[in-house]
Length: 337
Image 1 (cartoon, helix red, strand yellow):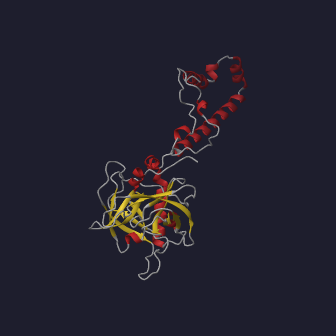
Image 2: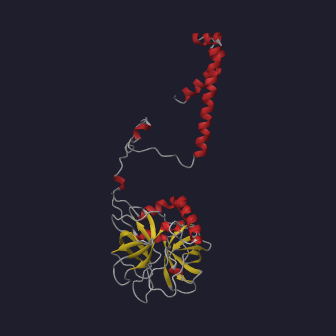
Image 3: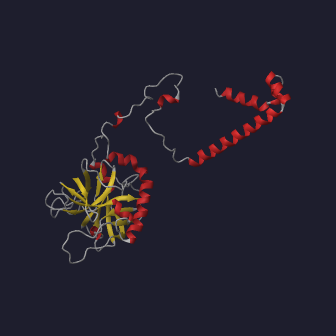
């Protein structure tokens, strides 16, 4: 497996800080997952319908991002009872936030799968570093243990301080966001915690109807459009030595006459569909079939005319009986065919 490490300086561009509207009280973190949409935890926006979303300055697709954006909580999972003996909110502890008048930003690819146990999963968010001091943004790495009976992803061996909730959990092996941080085992000790899986957004694991409906549409949009930012995301997960993993036979080719295109083919690569030009390809295929049928019909008609065929076979009167063939041959010769 190729070595891949998360680059925090690039990951932070996809992460936002969530504050209470009208003041600088930080509630937690979130991740940009679709144009104008943020994924976070339900407990991060507890009791709030409107929040202040603070993006990284490099989050804009072009230019600089705004200093802050108003966000509206459009759907969330159920709240924890006021009197409860558990630190967990009802699964999946997720919330989706719509950004007001800002959609031209990067967003991270969601992966509908568990993290892999090989290697560490990584998070970056606005966990509290010092009491009474505003969070500046910090990384955290975890070892994935497995999925609990209620659906949460169990993690160990990493710091999960308050404020990290809602931060994206990135699995390098899956090359995407597999969930968001939710609960800490011990806020003052590096013992790991739990994360809410991205798969819960589709409603298959018991998410409330409104969250499941909006989440399903958001996931579909993410999987359809996240490729637009693949270059930026690949900087988050660079592969060491990627430029040396595939032979490039086209390098060094020179000369007045280019070699055959087959020189650049690699037998171990499978066929893939050609994207984005399906209509043009279908039209070209139809024209090709129509032309083939016309040529066959023409040959059948010529075959029935024995006298003309005899002239053609003898080379006598070619322009008279097959003028189109003469013109076509000239075109082919001019193209070097």
